Length: 253
Image (cartoon, rainbow, N blue to C red; front, side, top):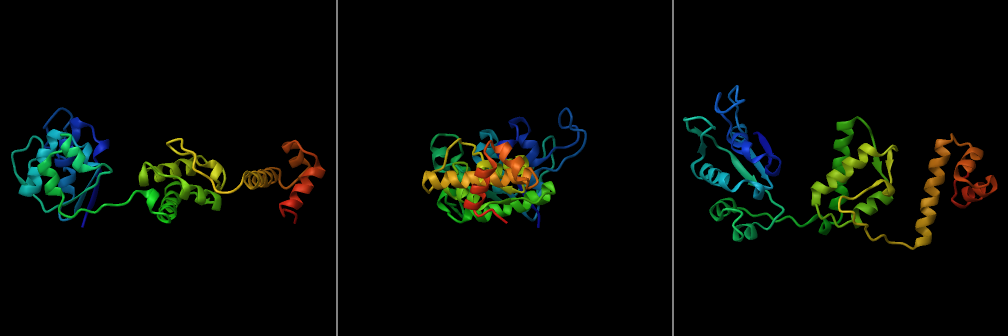
């Protein structure tokens, strides 16, 4: 059975009806051929309407009519088309508040609210962050043809962040760092959050600075092919000091 996903916030208001219900050839300028809409594409399956509160108010009546009648008209058409399509509506807003403010139709809300599933925000779901991160990283591997992993520090940072944008923000943050990171291992220092929030990091300052210094030395050694003299010069320290730090951080072969 087909599963058709639609993000209501990504469709221009002027194209919304055509995207959902399709149009006949010649229905409007540029309609050079018949087009099936998302509702028809999901025949005998499921249509997911994400961010449904972003649907134009005037179109909500047509969705309501479709749910009640199990049929619709394409834009520019005069033939009623019957389909059996299940609808799942998603929103990150309080829909009852949207109704009370007059931004969402009360009758449509009650028609949709047959089985109500409330998903807690990502910040309250602990280990789910890492499960989702692993899923997205696997998808990016296929999408971009590169294998990258998250370091332990990066995973800890993801768990400590509040994720005001929930799962969508997690996906965007990971995809951005996946594209921009030059290393195959993504470190916490590579990650930039959309909100600009700096998560609270557990641990004293000294240990954090030591961890950072160790990573800088490892990266510099790799960039200089393991040559300690060149590494020391690049870091601006003496060879003797570098050797001391290598021993201190257990980086001596």
